[in-house]
Length: 176
Image (cartoon, rainbow, N blue to C red; front, side, top):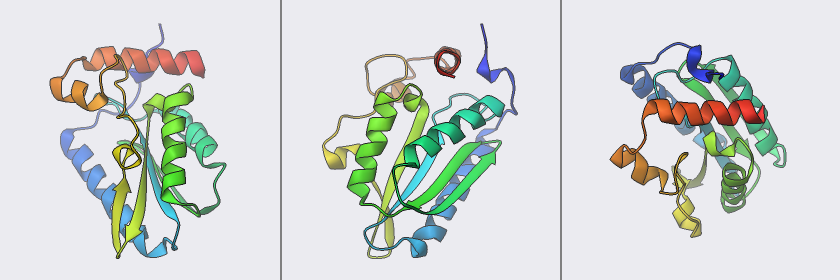
């Protein structure tokens, strides 16, 4: 049995908080570069536990995200391959609703899509805001393990980190 999480550097909560703040800063920095009727796509992986990146996760992210954005007219692309997890920030020349619908389809229907977290942002009055599934009347994100919503399982801590990592490892090994 291959364990994708056997390699990598453990990240502390403090490092993850700093990483989230850096991601938010990058999105705010890019706000002035987003043309009218375009969207900002911010992507990462849904990885539980202290190991957020390694060679396998980085490769999966790069291939998967490049596949996702291949259908869009990309204006700017920034990839981070850092210890707190791979991330991408991409400005696409497409309406946010079209991009979000494609993101949900990618997350729901591609073999490794369920481990991707693809957020789509729009600019309105010089403010960057996320376009959520609920805004498009789409179903909430499902849990990686069961049929409950991801939000519900996270709140209730229905699954252990080991259980989630085993599922992700199996998914990656079976779809590489």
